[in-house]
Length: 248
Length: 168
Image (cartoon, helix red, strand yellow):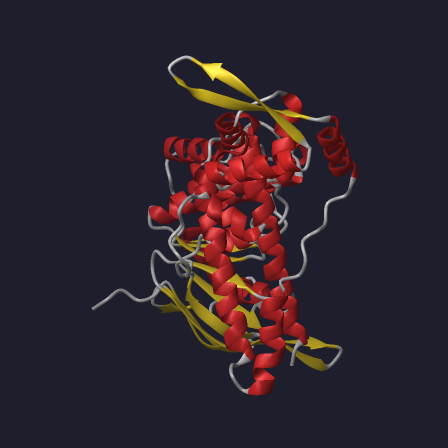
């Protein structure tokens, strides 16, 4: 028997109430993500992208439908059961970083691994690797408030990965980054993905989305496209420069 | 290419092959390498228009080479070029025509067109990512060119989303 998908949603619906008026944000999403897949979710603002990943992380409750993670049904879990599940299995990168203000960068990143039962040494080595990859090795002893926005966002990514979660969820993980920092984040995402990390992220950034195995496009709370980013359909390139020339 | 050759000649006189090498060295692999024939044709036209002049330089054991230099008129053309703002890129109207007209004429479905176009842009972006990865970190000119291409592509994608939202 093949292993269950990491994520499986069945007719997932989320309707908000706005002063008694129902506002559907997600309208019947069936999404299956296998272990090791990297899925980018795109779509205009208000298309339901963030609501969808928040529900997958148990940070927002579904109105109807089912969510299965790793073969277990989770949409019926209590908040405390969700908290435990997140600690064990899910890394989450928010648009706003939610770092613990009175802990150093190093402690912020090590905490999830320690909570999940890693030894202090394992937690430290993992933290050193992640901060190094993100160009933040020399910021380990700083407090989050001393960091620029882009640095905080990279720390949040390191924290989400500290635990080697079964599932990495991210909402616009490069939203506050300049292009050089985005490159570091892209490189790290590519690296952990090659090591088997399952990733689902919401992004507007085409550089991020183009790294994914699969792009899911939402419009008005529904999936309108779901497929691989294929090869470029045109004549074989004579030189690398053709890519740029085509765009100029 | 006319004006980039004039600019290089404003720095110092050069022969055709040196100009080709200079362009390659400055722009790196992010820019299509110019064809030497194209460079000689362009130099010939610049000479005819009085913007450059050539002198024959003798070489031992080899045929003479032509070294080009900028004339006063060439310098004026270069100054005028530098003083003018450069035309901005325009909206890629070919896809937009398709998008607006295809459903009216029944030849294609709008959602399918948008989805195909989005995947194509993302595939182009993937190529640019790989090109950036292969480019030497110190090659600022090439990296900026790639980044410019990426930003244009991002704008095209954002606009595609707007079309998706606002066209019924």
